[in-house]
Image (cartoon, rainbow, N blue to C red; front, side, top):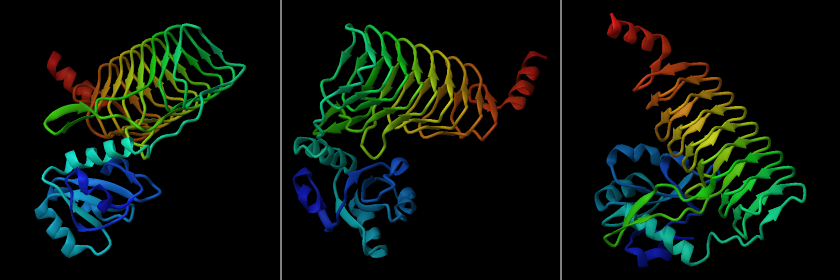
Length: 299
């Protein structure tokens, strides 16, 4: 695809360029060919990667980019974010994202008659159990030996809002939710599919998710991680392996949580957490610092 193919969404082409997928800076496709939108000069440096081949931006920033780059496709828009999502909607209209594979359920899986499963683009592996009231939407792949308990919704569109022609809309999601083997998702959880195919939501092997957990689009959860009840994990967050996330913890978007980290109950995490680090509090800090601050408060 080329930028010039989408002048109907309000683009002015400064330098035509190709792209293979849409993405945001924090979730670029590793295979390259990414189209992004740029609103602020502070993020110019993030374009210095061969993974990005085209950008939609403002007139002022386009002039600066044109003078500094030679290979980057550049399009101008009065509202780059709106035009970016209009391209996404146009790709949906053209059937670009369509994959019409019939849903495939292993003959050893046990799926309740009370579950609702999309008729296409779902795969359920061997010996997996799907209980009453589970809803599985399109673009969900579930591995072997999993348990999905009642009331859980898998593959829903997450909270991505854009303003298109003066109207706020929930942006349709076209990525996948990929769940590994031996995963347990307890009751009344929601786990969203990826916004774009460049940033799927991935739940790795042997992850256990307790009741009432929300996992947003583009989140990646490493193997053997345990997520307690009431946790909220915002979009495009990376959770390492063997992590403990305590009840009602909230993890902000784009955060990286290292392997073997421990996030205590009720923590509000707004910065990256290192391997083996234990954090607590609102906002969460290293655990020993939290205990000292609590001690001073109680003194």
